[in-house]
Length: 433
Ligand code: SIN
Image (cartoon, rainbow, N blue to C red; front, side):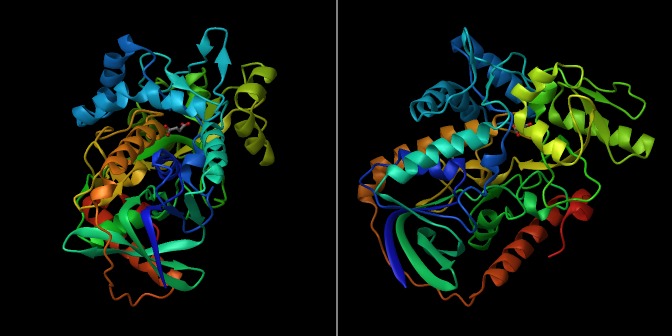
């Protein structure tokens, strides 16, 4: 079956829905997700969103991001990220998102490797609040259609030009022809045995890009979050214990109750210190303690973490939380320019699936949602300008794949093979294909 849209967006996390909302209302837009709309990592983001607080903070924000990223960041993209941060945060406020405030305005918090408090948040459920508010807006837009349970099988391409995607929706194959296609499929956490990501986030966009010879960059730049909840029996993903807990004073302790690292160092530094500590004490976890704060403060500032830990018998107002590092984020991905254009004409990539280069080798905390906002907005603006000049063509590509399991298996194999070739040290952490 054939369907025709102006823009096809694959993925319903922040990058996907924010680009949809920034496209002209007269464009016919289709958003697809292989699961359900809210099964995206943006929804799980707890800590918050970084923003340059004022013009004086721009250079400091850039310096902090460069320090965390080991100076491997793309400076042009990073400057754009910092300069356009407050514009996009104001847009979120216009969409009705109520970030926590105090008498002076936003209640900024701090996380590892930031030199000032510049992270805005909605308690410890920032991603969920942002996604919910934007969905309300999406539902009002008559030009935007959403297909859930719809898997991208392959891109429809000819001569390095993208004309949409072949998809499978509830067992039926469709050709979605579009002038522009945006991949916003997220990272690769589902390929790791231990990750804070949804299990369904398995790098599909990157696998499909690899299959179509679209340029990929820094696939080996994988971030391990220092603090996920340690549970003896892993239930799917590991629950994140936000870096904001350390930002608000939480202390990392070894089994003897001693501190062993500056909790606000960059993520790679804290992760390394925890891994060493676990190795030396032959323990599968260390502790993150916030119990010295008042009950009222903890329940008000970290209500979701409090509730989730309580479900497994840990009252964080009384006890330290057992934590262990887990895969969290991919800094690399589909190589894009500062308008999110990939190496294939009319194919864009936004959010974690893309590699703008802003993060360098190691992402500064709370820069991921900001990157999704800034660069999906830039993609949408460019598409709004150029789409009139793009010709819609129908090409048919033979696809033998007819089942969801077969697509997932193929995608997983493509990306696992690439990953193994760049990160031999992670091979034992990867799932079997
Ligand atoms: C966190 O709250 O620690 C995660 C936010 C992020 O990955 O930047």
